[in-house]
Length: 476
Image 1 (tube, rainbow, N blue to C red):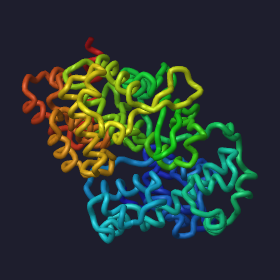
Image 2 (cartoon, rainbow, N blue to C red):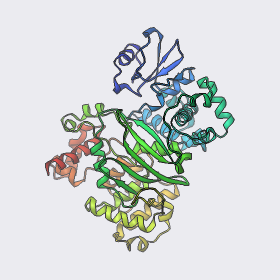
Image 3 (cartoon, rainbow, N blue to C red):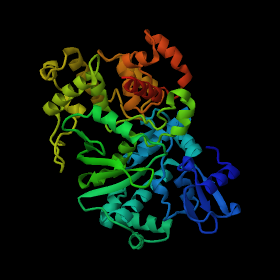
Image 4 (cartoon, rainbow, N blue to C red):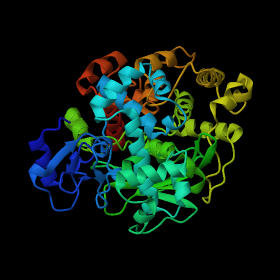
């Protein structure tokens, strides 16, 4: 949003949750910065400065409020090209990529020059990518120090710092206290075998609808869903473990429990959870754009992915069959090729296969588990493309090029490519127009007619698809 001082101050006075995460306010007299929903007494207008990101506030010498905790603020979705580039870079940084790669490597992955990336990032967030990464590491460390019983050394490593000394020095410089001093004010701590985080979202959030969507598509061994919570196994690099997600009590957030085995991959894990549950969504903005279509369910979210390959395989297996049939076949696929994973939950014991485990298989290896030959070939070709680096299924991938590359894989058509774009690439304007349910809900016989009429829903056509599917559920 444009940081107009008058508008920002009005939002601050109203504590309107719709502005949470869209800007931060720094108070000149205290040198503290807050979220616009902070419950402390509002400062005088003349003492306020406004920033587009937490990193922009910190680089100017402001430290985070201990009450509203800026690290808990939700993100926000964008579709503009430059803003999408900046958000893609931020997503990679949140995923911990700058811990092992340079900014040049990041820019190469995003198919731009590092100079262009720095310029766009500065425009969007008010700081450089490196400064943003530094702030994200510190905010994660602050959260771990406050909410868990991890040692300071483990906190430093989990937050992406290469040395304890560097962590201590930067923490004290930024926050004017040592990590130990912060711990004196912490509340309840997580058990040592798990870590608990609250990830904020902008209400409304239709949690029952999201849970029902995931439950209907849950793969045996990988996911367990009941009427209150979502659990699944997860792989992050060489680490593996499990997560559990439930609504947080008394606040607009999801409570995420992460197994201790994933502690050193927290940036990546939390980033993927945010993508899976679409926590960056601004539902009011989308509902306004979709109009009557979204009126009945304004809090619908677009479920994303923790693993792009998993979503792509699901899409291929789901071609021309029911969701139930596709999940049954997916369960066989996981049982045959997925690794075992130890969890404390019954029925949760498998990791979805990695592309490298599938790329060397033959068609017969896959087909003998009840998978049609053409789909078996498509899955193997997909795995090979990912392993060779010719294809990326991360949300940061370039949309048009990725969709085009997917459609070159034999057995992957427009429906499959668009569905993958919806979920794996988190593209809000994806539209699988050949989808039978979409055509039925729109009362069209021809996909091209549905595509033409969906123009009115741009750039939120993926959300329109969810509402169309939902309308069919209510009519049956």
